[in-house]
Length: 264
Image (cartoon, rainbow, N blue to C red; front, side, top):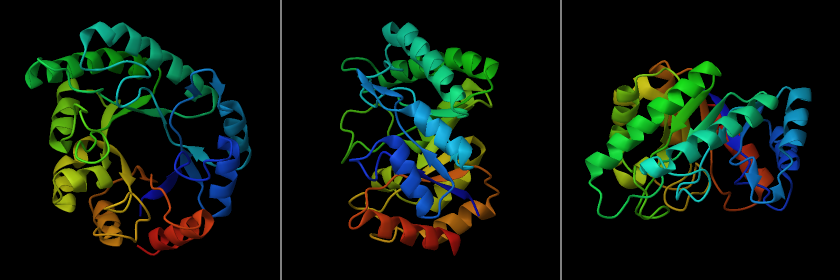
């Protein structure tokens, strides 16, 4: 079955990143992911996170390059932001490699009013081709993420898993894959298992949460044990990320999710 990681941005939010990772370890997990190495002037303690994970055999699977609305790191749909984005990517890779992390999620930014979808998609492809050259030189992987625009990310450009897959195929680099976020893609189109099978050649990572609400995986309309079994059957070798906000006690929830994913 896929190895499970926990997004530590969604749990124990009153604690520093390293303390969140400790609690995730105590819940039985050995892999984590996080978002940004910085938040303005805030020191997020990424170096401490890296040291703890290295000393305790915990994999840091990925970080995030740029914000969904492009407020951090720039936009992929705006050619005027390309240099800004590439500079942010290079800095993210540097920070990540210092903590033995070798992948990061990238977002497109919001759609540009008055600019055709085709033109914006072309800009995403061209920017990611430039990014792929950087990633390839550093043995680093980028995960392009489509998001739902109905609940969480109104105005976001890329809401289709199929379009994300097409972009990755046109970029044509083994270092540019996509995130299939089961939560977001259930909201946008459903038919999860069949769509995953069609996109397996370009999927590099998964995210998950219950629908509706973005809470525990065993709350809502999705059958995650069946989804995980299908992914395993398709030969997926990457990680499956839990990016959910627990509806109740966080430690109890994480231990329950560990049991759920171990029995699949």
